[in-house]
Length: 367
Image (cartoon, rainbow, N blue to C red; front, top):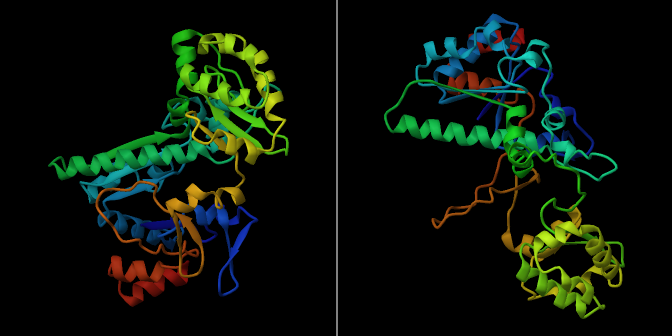
């Protein structure tokens, strides 16, 4: 995968600390590291005609082109879908934007960021406590847009393998992605005229389904998804305290109606023992539970260790592997470090595009 960057580099290169220190002493933002393994970087100035021609030459020999400029920018550069498909009639061209290709926010030239899309799209209105909204700890909307784009690109490539080789223009935006992943919160409004609220770690339609603080100040999450699980949960609580009053609520609908009383009672019971004691008590209980782990605890969790999902590059950078496995054994491949800005410019110009040294020297000197 070739990453085309300006000479100052991708903005996320500067999103730190924290940084990873490479063996040569140079530093790289861990944020940038998280999304750029196995890529090669070519640094170009797209205000320069020669650099634009490089992008066109790359498009000629590529299966997929992904761009995330403001709508209209690629047209001004002569790199829009209509122009690119003239030089590569089978190109899969994916445009990723904040709000789509047109509309009032596009006319205002608003930039699109994960937090803004999750605000406008309602996600932050349902994330947090009753007192205030909370930005999710990772850029869920960004990540989801990339996954939607990945699925669409794979589907387009499969379509082409089946004989439909015409060029495709795939368009996806953060706001549309956010609406799509709002899931049952969207359905509540569209089909039940109910405006979803913020429930902290709780669930709007299931009780108890949230995290509880224990005696030692650590948190434990419990997800009681049906009435049978609720009875098993109460059986375990009964070993610690008298919770007979909670057995009145035999159905989830009853529990949702009397949420406050039930959660207050359960919360009080959880504060009587440390988290590990609860975990020991809940073993083989028949309902879902788990520690609310910080990242140090995550990578010391026995199941996480068992899954063996961490790969390490030659420089020592660590990544999480693809969580999907198949019945076909595949060797574990050592990932490559994310690139420095323009690290592979000469390699790409020579090995992929076949430019001669004079042309390469001309481009690199100019840039």
